[in-house]
Image (cartoon, rainbow, N blue to C red; front, side):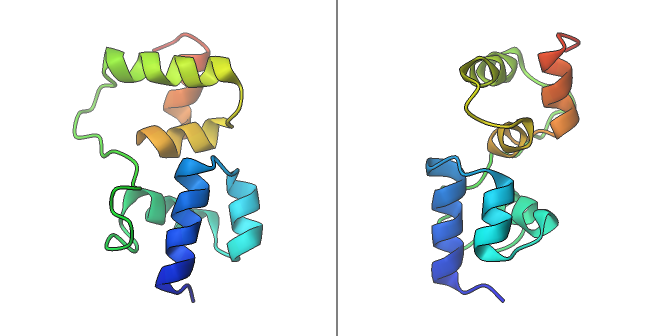
Length: 102
């Protein structure tokens, strides 16, 4: 069971240090599902709420968001899953953007 201090450290590693999910999973012994729930603010929303991926209320991905994701993909420093968490979309959306289908 995670403690609030661990969740704060995890969120910093996830959003500020761009740590890979695999490494977060190993370091904190947390499932990928729970990592995603923390990133979305569904678990531990009270701990560093500013470090939560933005929620998407629309069904379509805005052009501004697509541009941000493309820029992130061009950097090549993050995996698709991490980009998806950061920008509040599914990994398949990132994949479609990468393949220029969105």
